[in-house]
Length: 102
Image (cartoon, rainbow, N blue to C red; front, side):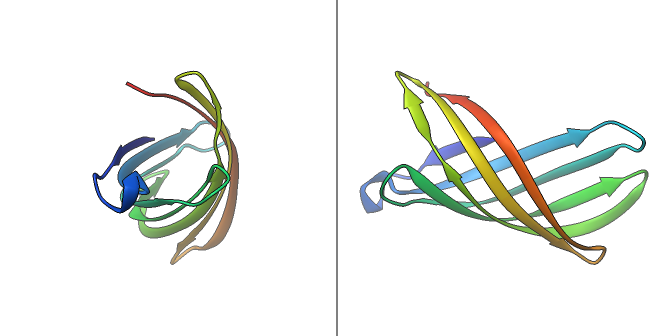
């Protein structure tokens, strides 16, 4: 994931990109872009649009998610929950993101 905080709304609004790949019994790749809004108490919500490629089959996705950012100096550890919607159905995606500021 990558986020650029916009210099508006007290830096609470950002734009970002995401890329995920999953390898196992089948391969799957997700990539997209969206907007992120930072709520109080280190919470952030996102709304993104992108592409899902699974074993050569493509589908457009809409992703809505929430994360809790726990900051340690310039680093962050963030449990995340995203809901991905496509023509193939709805999937809940749980994860742990690691980040740093630069």
